[in-house]
Length: 411
Image 1 (cartoon, helix red, strand yellow):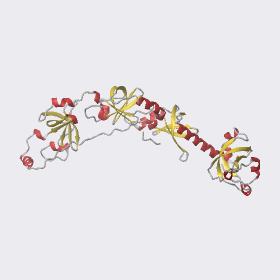
Image 2 (cartoon, rainbow, N blue to C red):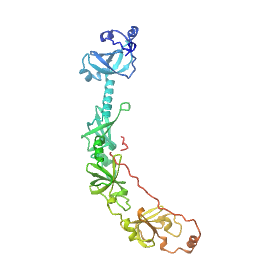
Image 3 (cartoon, helix red, strand yellow):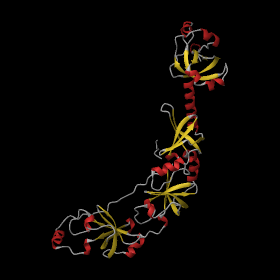
Image 4 (cartoon, rainbow, N blue to C red):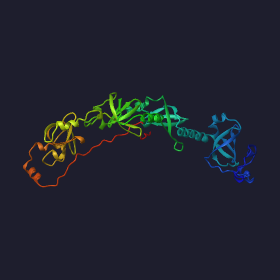
């Protein structure tokens, strides 16, 4: 360090007798302090109503009033000569002394400690104080924090079949008073926001276990939750999702119709992505559509029950595994605006098979082909026209993400 940049220390005894303006007059270099700055000083003396601190390179500072009494616990453990962190309340009072705060510095120290715990990924044990529909309230270093539902571990994540918020709250309330191991994932002093995660504690362990899994591996597990988009299955210490489209080969309206919580199942791992395991139950079962070619033929008349009416046509159940689609254009020789005008759910009718596509799991049916076209409709059909191929709309159900470990739920 060059001589011109070297700081000249101010002896504590001399500093107490000199004001800031006097020090400036002596030619001693004084660094400028700003309100809110955190600085380290040496305790000079502790009086009844005020505490003097030597701020090396700055001058002398004083702590008094509320800034003193709010942190008596800190002072009681200190003696002259000890180092102490303080924050600047006023850069220079009328006496030329820096007004300081132990209280504000204490708060900053708390948040600094929380940030250090976050950066080091330290595991902190904390008590659950309250519960709300979004998650759990905790306290770390006297700061209230929030543990969102999406950040709960597999063990504590509430599996409520119908997603009822009151039932979820009931599960969360059962955790009040318990001790959870968590990691801090957000420590924002300015926003006074402290967010913790329980599942983060097990992430490394989970990653190691996920690394041992392979696509195509068959696992045995138990259903832990059933939701509209599928079922959660716990196998070993891990959990995966069986999407509704992977539960069975037949079309499913409600997963709860074919699978229950507590049921033991065998499933195949079909993907591992970003810590999420996707499973399939149907891929371990024989595809009934492979037999459809043998059982059904184009031109064959079959009896079926209307399973569902859609704007574009009706789905017809031919047996427990096979459903066909009678497109709206195949319901009548006359123009049809609403399929429900022709057929109702549960109604049984005879249809003619007009197409079979086993690989695509499609079987086309026609109701109008079972009757002769009226003369007026026949004449219309005999007119030359550009052939248009009408395809069945492809309806895909998008898999939702599992918890746990989530979009974070905020209070």
